[in-house]
Amino acid sequence: MPTKPPIINTSPTFVLPTHEERKLSNGMTLIALEDASQPLLTMSIVSRSGAADDETWGETNFMTSLMNKGVAKEGAVRSAQDIAEAIDFTGGSLSVSCVFDSLSAHLSILSEFTETGLDLLTDIVQYPSFPEEEIERIRQQTQVEIEQANNDAAYLASIAFTQGMFRGEPYGHPVVGTLETLGALQQHECRRAYGRSIQPQNLFIAAAGNFRTDDLVSTIESRMAGFSPSAANSTVASPSSAKPVNKPSSGVYLIEKPDAAQTAIRVGFRTANRMDTDFVAMQLLNTIFGGSFISRLNHNLREEKGYTYGVHSSIDARKHSSILSVSSHVGSEVVDSAVGEILREIERLRTEPITDDELETTRKYMIGSFTLRTETPTQVVSLLSTLELYGLPKDYHSRYVAELATMTKERLFEVQERRFSTSDVVIAVSGNVEHLRQKLGSFGSVSVVNAHGALLSSL
Image (cartoon, rainbow, N blue to C red; front, side):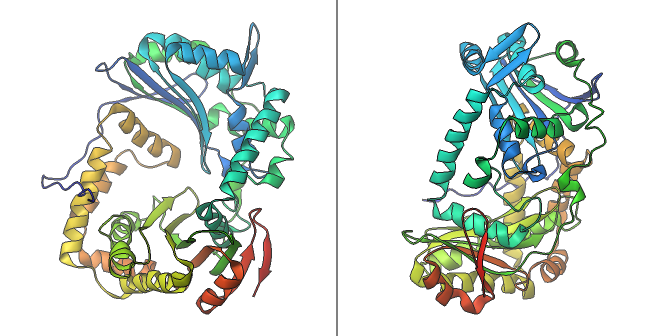
């Protein structure tokens, strides 16, 4: 039985809990939220550079995977095993991850082990050694992950969708790269990606937990005061900020997956960024469209037509371009009908106002969901990190809730007419290409791509 969405009926207001922001001596900002209720510390050192800045596809993610696999500084050389054993002894976790717009080194630990945890976290950020033996091990591990992903119909559909939406742009490749580009990555590429991404002027720190901010600042300063900006990198613009954002190549993009039990579909278009005045309205409209279990798409394709077990839409809001995308799995015999219904729902939103009930139910659902995401200090610090990463105003979340609370059907319909259109839609499908070419040819020009992101043919 589906879980009912959280609904609230109280007056919707939101104020961020009390926190501090400190500027460290090397220029980095520390965002700190003290919480003595639990004996825990969570901390992230975040870079504003990510996979969108790759010079070779996958190099930033590859470098990121190696940051906690060895450090070398005067008087303290640690292997991957040394680091793993040290963090395991505390019962904590230490990880580094990468997405298109950022990368993050994250520590979660009992506060009694704060000193040990910060030693490890600051070392992997400042002194990664990228050992040759670990490079080969991580390469093999990542190759296996890519090979497994290339057998997943949904992942392949996302590859095709990316090529239609972002070909030739910073977002136009998988974060992990491809089997082909991965084979070319060596220590040189790791050091290049590190030098581009891990500069104090490009980093900030977000922390929540059982600490005193003055003590935390002192502890971090003692470990990172000498981590100063590099003149060689301080004035270099990142590729993602310098490269223009193009119009997507609308049409149908197919990728071969002949043995797929079901056909994976991605349909989408460009939409409003976080700083755009239409962003909150588009979030609300997307929730009605396909962003919840009671959405129009799910009612149409699942409940009425029986094409799928589920269909979902979401807005992926990135620094330089945001997309609204629909994802689902359907039987290959109804793929054209399913795509047709998705496009019909887009057109319906463009031409018809939503109902009063849709507005009120969705408004309350979204405010309730937002409230659930602000219950813990770690969740709040995550919101604060979003503000820092994307350069948003400090009252952004308060304004977000207030705008939801006062949104009108008239305002929404004006956005619907401008933002929902089938003219620039990218349709991406994985399955038997010849079968799909016949089924989907009427929806626009058809292109075939492969798992390496190469365009194989276009009609």
